Every structure is written in C-alpha cells, then in structure tokens.
Image 1: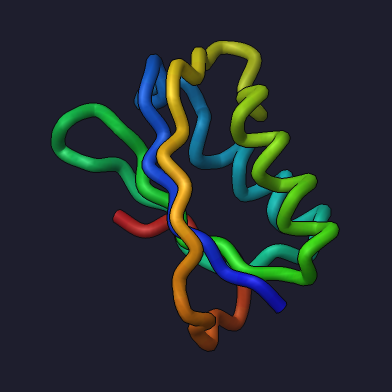
Image 2: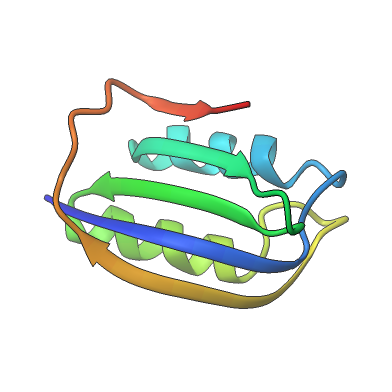
Length: 90
C-alpha cells in the first residue's frame, strides 16, 4: 500500500470533478478523501496498491470530469491512514 496527497489546480470546482474522481477511486478500490479548498483548488488524499494508485493519479491528471480542466497536480507521498472508503468531504 502507498498513500499520497494531491492538490489539483485548474478549473476543478463546480464542474463535477470531486464526484467523477470518487467514481474513479471506487472503480480502482482507492481509499481516501477529496474536498474543495477555499482558493479554488481540490485536495485529495488517496491510498491503494501502487498499481491502482498510479492509475488513479493518471486519471486525476487527465481529469475524470469532461467539464473540468487540470492545470497542475502537486503530489507528495504521505503515511498511510485508515480510510474505509473514498469520500467527498465538505
């Protein structure tokens, strides 16, 4: 298992980005959280087996929402957490 945090910049709020990211995470069995940040970015913590996590990261960079535009993803490896699923946090 591997865990990362990501800050996603671009047109990622108000375009279904968090919900399509959740669909992608659920499909890949990725656990974690996703939430909007006050500055217009989206914050993600994700953990999974390395292969699934890499697929998730690639999906985020390519934008799971057709209405969104990802300009930049800041990615950092973090210690694992005990997330039961992938949740949209408000």
